[in-house]
Image (cartoon, rainbow, N blue to C red; front, side, top):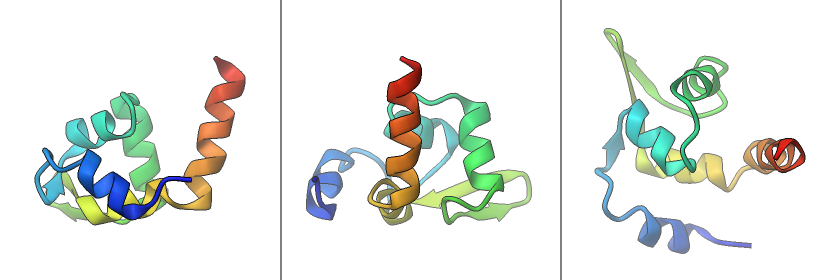
Length: 80
């Protein structure tokens, strides 16, 4: 099990607040549509200002460490 320190180091090149393309990359190349769905369903905490989603890097790490993300990853493994 990886911890917060590991992900902080792994995502060090990203800014403190990321946009959807960066978020997609951080989650292993998920599609824009999937990323927006996660945000609209409030599975990942974020800010929505005008027409743009902003996600603090710490909140991306919170999601990656969550049970919801583990469940999502297990579904992907089955489909591959």
